[in-house]
Each structure stands twice: as structure tokens, then as C-alpha cells.
Length: 259
DNA sequence: ATGGCATCTCCTAGATGA
Image (tube, rainbow, N blue to C red):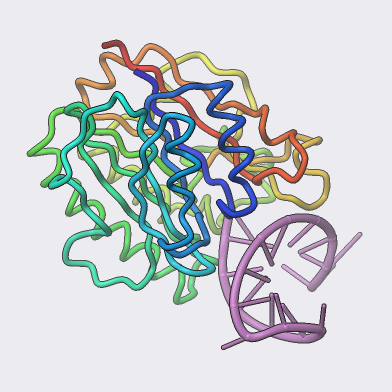
């Protein structure tokens, strides 16, 4: 079973990339972030035509998440969860569904803007609520995967220029502590379970030729519960679509789980 | 060097992203 996550920065613009990528990488589950479209504009039929059914939670202009599942994957309609229970939020950032017995959670963490700002406080509050809810989810579901754009680079090796980024948004100690708290619930960063090339990143700024210079950050992650971690055989970042014409600034992350 | 680039809308300017 292959699970993937990709921030596509507008599904309107990137639908052709999603379709092309899926035809080359027929994963079982693909979590998308930053749809930037309302539910009524979600391209359900186009994705259904290539063999995927979709669960989605959109809004106009900003945010929005979706889970695409191969048609053959059984799912439970009643298991769908939209946003974090008990956390009032007009921003559509989280969607969960149980697919073939695996609890799949797709999350678009708040950006945070900069430490000390209101948006940063919201990021921490959002993550706090996520932690609390995840604790109960993990008590319910043995097999759980949290996939998404975390907007946090967990370690210095996940940053192209740690000195320049020191203390800034996406890498600050308080964000890393919040990330570590998620892991302490029993989740493991699948990417770091395996040997990886140095300077492996999942996001590159559109500006300053960042992708060409590999000036990136690793902020997109797949966190797995213990049984899934034990069964995980591979985790990679696919830089290919970042090199396509008019790309998303993020690359997809893929985890391969033994059946 | 607070720019650079991409996307969206109350669309040709400003907000947001990371």
C-alpha cells in the first residue's frame, strides 16, 4: 500500500499535474493540501475518471484539503471527520477518513507567518488541539497515518541554510517542540526511518531560483502509528513534479507500507 | 538587500504563502 501527500497550491491550476503524477505514481491514497477552491468546484468527476474517489473539504481562495483513494479501497462513510472536533475554525485544514482499516488524516498546518504574530499563536493553538484529538484517535485506531504540509522543518538537516533560518518561522524551537509533542504520542516520521540523501527537501521558494539551487526545507511529512511504522518499507520525496512547467512549490512525499 | 514569485479576489493592488 502506498500513501502520499502533496501540497498542490491551487487544485484549479494543478489538476493536470495531479492527474499526470497519479498516472506515473498510482498510489492508493493521495492527500492534497491548499486546494484553494470551494467544494462545489472540486473536480470529483475528473478524478473519478482516472480511478480515484475523493473526500474533500474546501473553501474559497485559501486552504482546503482532500483525500483521494483508489476506487478499490473500501471506506466507511461514517468515519469521515472534517476539521478538529471541538476546535472552532473557519479555515478548512483537516480531513480524516478510515480507508481499508487505516485511519488517514490529511492536514494543512497553519503557516504561522512569524514568531510573535497572531498567526503564529493560531498555529500553536491549532497544533495543541490537534495533539489532544490525536491522542484519542490513537486510542481508537491502531493503524493511523497523519499526512500533510506541517509547515515545520523538524531538524537542522531539514533546512538548506540553518544559520540564515535560525529562530524563524517554520524552524523555531517552539514549533519544533510542538512537532516533537505529536511524535511523543507514538507517531514516527516515516522519512527518517530510512537512509536518505543529504539535503532532502519537500518545498522550495518560487523565488531566487531556489529549486535549481536546492535551497529548500523539508516541511511535508508522513507520521505513522507503531504498527504502520513497523510495516513501512520505504519513504521518499518525489522531486520530479517540482521541475515541471508551472509547478507547485511543494513536492509529494510517498510512504510504502507492507500489506 | 524586506526584494525575489505565484495564486487568489471585493481582480490591474493587496493579502497570503513559507
